[in-house]
Amino acid sequence: MNENLELYQHILKDSDMGKYTISKLLDDLKEKDNKIKKIVEDILHQYESFYEEAKEYLLEHQVSLEKNGKMSKMGASMGIEKEVKSDNSDSSIAEMLIQGLAMGSLDMEKKIGNYEKEVDKKQLKFAKDFWKFQESSIQKLKKFL
Image: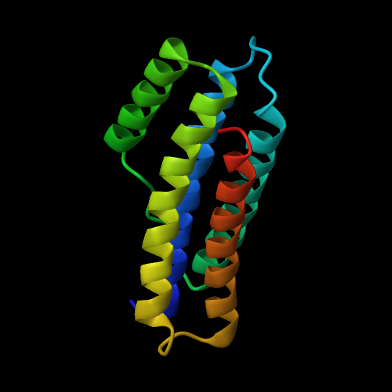
């Protein structure tokens, strides 16, 4: 698989996990009155947008879509549920999301560095936009710490 496709595959998997975990989190917060919900919903919508664009690109190039396994999603789901039950404060939720976004951001930054010279400019811009989205989401969430 060429580097452009690998980069999009990575973004697809990362945004898939982001969509899944944030949807689970919002579901767990449904009956609660958290001020952070609006920002979390915005992050979810951005993950959905990146996911759809990556998916479209990969299908256009006839690449099978790699998604996260059920076990990793189940583990994330259980972790979120446990965290929300023990402390559903905006601060705790922000911290949990920042940790996940930071891991994804660091991984994306590495991918960009590894593929920067091999991928097309349009694909590199998409990857950098994804990385910037993760970084800006972290900054927005820090206000709740």
